Image (cartoon, rainbow, N blue to C red):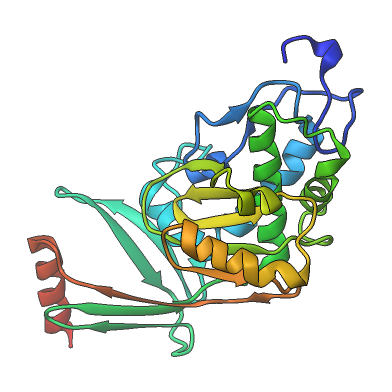
Length: 277
């Protein structure tokens, strides 16, 4: 949309505002630089509001670990970090390869645990709280932008539920969604398929570093249809997903990783730790 007189925000539906900021469909802080909306579809005020909720979601697991692993630089040109209970996840460069560091600054045994073994090490920590409402709002925002990019008339009242969910910034309303791990440096978004069942839900599948999610963009998802939606996603989408259908779902997630030393650097670090014991 190059004609400024035709600019209209797909979220607040206003034209009498500014459209100067670039609108990233998948957050720029997740490593996306190319998938953007043309100018004139997302106003600066809505853009600024979305950036806050993006950071909250991406800094909680499952986004936090893989954001640190796969995103090269933040907007400020720094390597990304992420806070966890009692510590911080960081990335450090070594002569051999980039290395993920989990630094524990609390001695509280409930804040995290590191068990070091010769053949493998096990790390356990608790994430920041992950809010179902906020994830739903972020997914609704990305889905509406993606449909707009596909030249679908998102100004139609058929998409007011997506618009309202996105603008709520995690307060209300809520759209059920699926979420699962996606341990690859991928940023992609598309409609799953065009079959008869898909036409009921119009599910959009979003993949970015850390996790993969599916949100229905059809007009509504009644409780009676949740089982049908669940079976459809299990059949059509590769991976392991959980359905978040409770708008009040909000909790930290305990994360457990088993790491195998993959280099002489890891082996040397292990030997140094043995000597300190």
